[in-house]
Every structure is written in structure tokens, then in C-alpha cells.
Length: 101
Image (cartoon, rainbow, N blue to C red; front, top):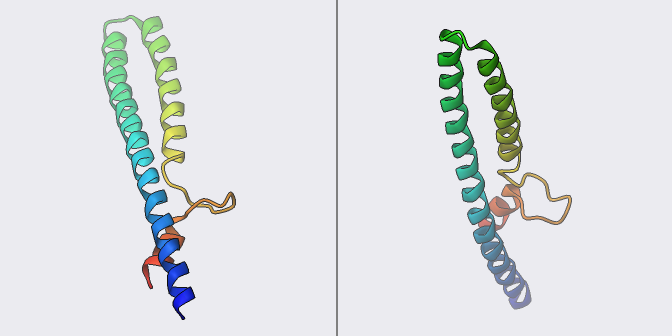
């Protein structure tokens, strides 16, 4: 029984270390998503203003840039949470499993 407890403790320690790494990474990605959302909002307001002023070409060019920001934001959002353990990564399910002990 002592060997199983020792292995469980080691697994919990490895999980805690890995979880700290993921937390920092997730926070960094969330900040990136937030910055992109702000850029999109500001650019949309500017594009609308340009359109109202009759500067349609400039507005359309800005809308093209906004599409790029949206793609970048979607890519950043997709990378926020590790959902798969196909590569041996720690998943939220494994965290819940280990914390249940």
C-alpha cells in the first residue's frame, strides 16, 4: 500500500508542476485574445466611420484587415485549453481524476 501512495504523491506533484506551466500559457493566450478583440472593435468603429464619410475603399481595406484579426483571434482561442491527451499532455479530465483521490 505504501508504494501506491508514493506513486500517487509523485503523480500529484508532476501534475501540479505541469498545471502551473499550463496556467501561465493559458493566461498569455487569453491576453492575446483580449488584445485582438480590442483591435477588432476599434477597427470596426474606424471602418464604419470611413464608410459614413464616403471613403469606401479605405473602409473595405480595413475590413480585410479585420478579417485577418478575426482569424488570428480564432486561432488563439482554439489553443487555449488542452483537451486531448493524445500526445501525453495533462488534460482537465486527468486533473479531475487525480484530484478525486
